Length: 527
Image (cartoon, rainbow, N blue to C red; front, side):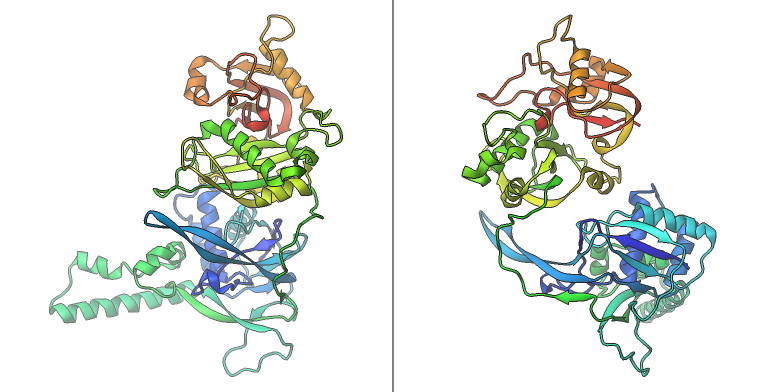
């Protein structure tokens, strides 16, 4: 009898129940059985490389859908944030208020989901793979780390289905909540057969003749072929077909024990002077153009990082010189820090893989203090090349680089290679030598080795300079590799592609050379 354990490293769970609007401020807690199964299936396609649902996975869904799980809920508090989102209105722009409600949780505690059904070893193996690869549950901000426990023994502290109609409720307080759950697979198959038969009979009665094959196909289209197909149908498609609740789903009353979910009045906004230092902060970028989402090309990561840096310093105003993590200067003397590479790095990301810059990961080995975090929380806009091309900036999360490496994924499901651990690395953005190239003392290989030493990396076994053909194929010559006028320029405007081979695996990010704090000289793990 499997038990799924889910931790929430971000300390937040975001999910809106089916049938509720986001501005109602309601959070689906615990996650509905329907949501859990959909998340597992989605993980198979995005993380495990499925193109169709394997037979064992379909059998697993049938096993889990045939019962109702019990939940052990960690204590949580309902919270919300409110945003005024821009809405284009012709040639002008208005705003609309959006409420983002979520449950705030202790990252050290886990949600347990126990299915009271014995399943075969082959299905357990599939479930283990899916749960281990699960990256989020609910909205994408709800990061999770999952593992499978062998069994659990639910007691009166667990959230369980309410008794059948007419039975007395347990005398222990709490709330009754309606969760969406799948019907058993055989029940859905029987229901679908009856629904299709009635639809065909009605059509034949209206037409006065037997319906044709094409007509039958159209009549059966609103009814997915089986329970797995129901779970895979997108919400927009269900709405287009006229469903107000997914086929194959039912609403089940659960009893949520008292004390598991608190509601508090909103706290007044205040300065967060006591914020604990963090290693990294992720910012999401969005276009502010009336003609749609147009973000800067990834090849412009250097100028975009510079502009974002200037925006952050402007947020701090007169306090900027006190923020060594962003300025790289000693607040007491105004001189550059002795340790040259401990302050902020602006690490560009293209998570949706469209060739455009959509996120910026700001990390600092010295950690980002409360001043740096205040600037990152307050920045709302930056700019890009051209006129009227503002970029909307949104705080997406904070944590360690290890947490971001385990949670961030590209649209295709691939991990972010620049944050990986590997023994072979290849240029993702061009390496620009920080000094003049000379035949002795300042060769390209010697400069690379010195850059690695200054950042605490081991010396590579091999440094390979990529051929011009490979540099062109990787698009490294398209990058902007000099800073704006008035800023420090490279000794020579040369850009190289490199491959580094280490004796042992090392953990990224690796950023070397000129403007490495602004997106140049980044390497990606090579499989």
